[in-house]
Image (cartoon, rainbow, N blue to C red; front, side):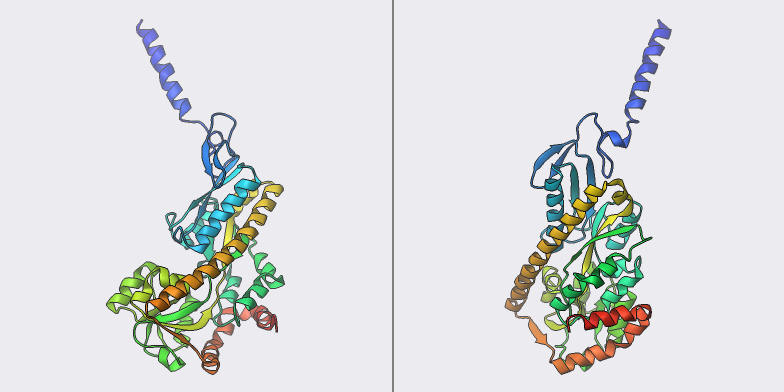
Length: 356
């Protein structure tokens, strides 16, 4: 009897152990083919609940739910769900819950996260050629930038990711970055002198502020509001929606439309994730990425207008640089072109000549 009880006990233990060893290919976990055993119900955007999707992927976005780039990500996921009949599901993780852009990009390289939207400043650490697209005062206006990115030059940049373990999918709009501060209006280059300006933790952005005569203060974007409020910094720089959505306009009411940077952003896929997919699925994802980019650009344009209206109604002072004065800003940063992009000056020249 004792031996029989021992035998029953061993059988129960083995059953528990074996049930805990079910492989990931049987559970429909992120990035893996979902198996034929059991079910895994996953929310498919615009399609309700789907059972047993073939793939469930994760998309990292560091902006809020209502931000144009986040809404573009949701459109991307919705289109993929529709075009694969729920066979491929992408779960959007917004608000930076998966980490900052640099750490997420590192996870993308080994397949820990499948998709992301990223600004070029952190991405240039992985693909140095992208520094070209961050050069200050590179574009005449938004139309000029999209002529470049939607043409042969943009395709050349898309083909520059070999060896990075990252797959570029489509360009997203992020508007133009402008200076704002709490001290005085910036109407001339001399007005930059003595100002302590927050910048991204980027060597090029630091160099730009120094070239314009101000003092750069690299810090996390989350710290900017309190730093402006306490006077730890005098100002910062960013686009209309960011200036408005973070309420920086409440503590730095002088906004100068110098448009020193038009830095596009990119949707990326992890190379390990990409390699799991069939050619047909890869083509679907590329197609959906391009469609979502068109949608995001439309939303961005609308959001810019809304943000500008809100800022103006709040009584902020909006300053436009006269053409002659803006040229002084451009001339001040020109040495940066050779310093940071000496190997790519042919591309810089081609960008400048595009559309002329």
